[in-house]
Length: 511
Image (tube, rainbow, N blue to C red; front, side, top):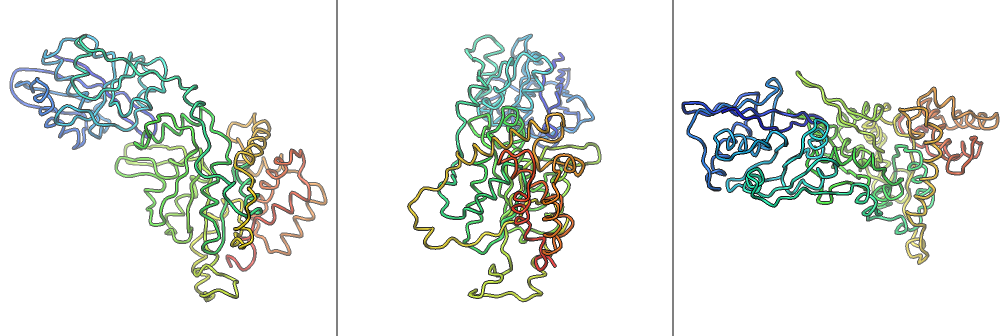
């Protein structure tokens, strides 16, 4: 008897439906074809034990299973439940004509309980697109899959629940989530708030500008100055995620198996990999490519603490994703693209000792040590960072102030208004949503300067020995400063403030 059941394979952030054909014939044997990996090949042992422990048996016949399309590599243990149900129906241990209307995925334990899978949201979206009636998956993944409307999503804990459903004996009900209501109901502020920050008014102003224009930023300062504390609070002033952004972000985290019980993600992600991270963990990859930290930070913030401590080759692989806002991973037989539109926030000490130009420093660094330390950050990478800001330690008087600082919600209101201005400005340009994404051509269109502003910028570049790459960055940042003030034109005051945020381009920093 031949039976077809359906599973799904996830490549990148998109799913592909897999047809599992199970055929029973005379003889004895178990043949699994269609490019399965070792985890799938081992499934026969898990399935046999799970069937026996639930009152069924592995048929003593010749079992041939084909996973189509046969030229597509399949991986992982999530096909256990798919194969088990196909074997039960093909061997007439259960009778149903409905099994072909559902996508079935889940890893089986030996006692028949079902373990979670990756990519449930992508699979559910594909199942709906292809007209399936429903989707059976582990209960732990049901909230993320139930985001998809007009698809019956069943979260199951064990094999018996699935069998009972198809035999018409169970009381299993689909999980229904009002996606919009769930999104807005749980929308809240992140844990960290700028109201906790004492002093550092100029740095908070700089962070506000970065958030308003989507600019990458690097914080330079000695140990204990508050660089990490400030970076952790940046997501709290970013505009709230839209429903579309929330779905995009959830999809990536679902593929990586990192979606929490809440299902839909409505907080902008904040990723902070350790400086020992490899290039694969940062940008994604592997034999079966998985999203890296830059994709997990999509629509959020990627924080690289102590930037020069990262291996140079690791930092260099970020150059293209920073420019293109997506990362492409190529293998011999396929190419996968992950979105990676994030804000880069980096921090670093000004020298190996951390106390550059400090006369009271306990440790000083030689010129050779300084050059070696600073050379770890390449010019092309620095070229993709719009704002450089020096962070100084907070004086004792500021630390002991009892006056409440401005809250993140107040700052976020201004940032959101500035982003709305940018959205209106770029509404006819599909690839640009905010100022940091402007190309050179768009900079010339939207960042026109009057004579006074142009002369000020020329003088600053000559006197401060600013590099040529600083020119476009200053114009982008000044455009954002003008947007925060609801100014249609860029003035000399905006240019003057933007010039302050290019400290690493000055002579003496990078040689």
